[in-house]
Figure 1 (cartoon, helix red, strand yellow):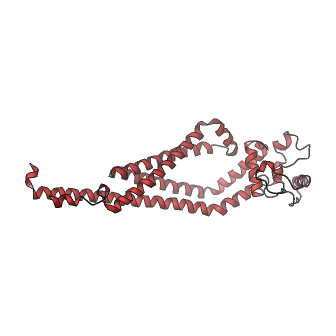
Figure 2 (cartoon, helix red, strand yellow; figure 1 turned 60 degrees about the horizontal axis):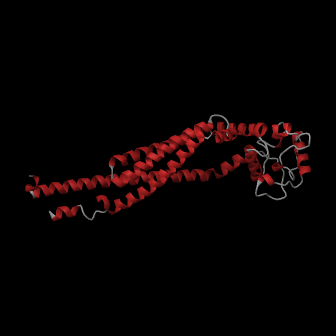
Figure 3 (cartoon, helix red, strand yellow; figure 1 turned 180 degrees about the vertical axis):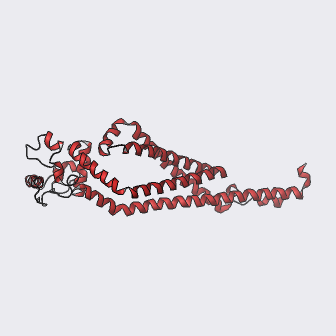
Length: 301
């Protein structure tokens, strides 16, 4: 009887062995982080749905149904990740094969969804690029004001990427900012953030042009279809600059997503191993009890 009971001892926490105990700890830590990430995504998704002021401002930057779609996707994804983290934590702590199986199933669903989103973005990349260009052009023409939310975003974009307008300075020619505020009658053709500065300002709103007069003259030349002086005016469009930036750093984004997918696959592999250890441990315990019953028939009474 002493030998039989000794079989279950020294196997480590929960009877899954030392290696199984380490994997339990790793899964627990991983899923606590996963659970927190899910809660954060869920919270932001709900915030995007209920905060009307935030929605109104973002809709100017991201017109159409995209914001609502993003909010719904974030809520669903956040809830799913939240459930994954919860089932993973509880399954590891309680050594529950059922919860761990649910964890693996949900994790597989997440990976499939990530692949689907990636394929969709790749297949429709040209359409997405065109819609981005149209949205940027519309913002410059209809929504830009130097001191509003759109203006802050564009002023940052223009100073950071050294560009002007969506396709170029000419985008401002018939803009509401130029026509309705009296800028056109004062000879102000483009915002100061389109001008080459004396030095780069920490805050785009405080940009000082190297030569405001020559900058505005260069913009007038661009409006007339001529070749503007690039020494005083940014002549490249921000749309092309933004695409260049995305393509340049897209490899890092892909690498990051690949790393996330690798971690998820490791999580599935570790969970599968833990399930195997739990099943093996339970089988060994059952075999030990059966042997005890055979060697001590009186115990069955």
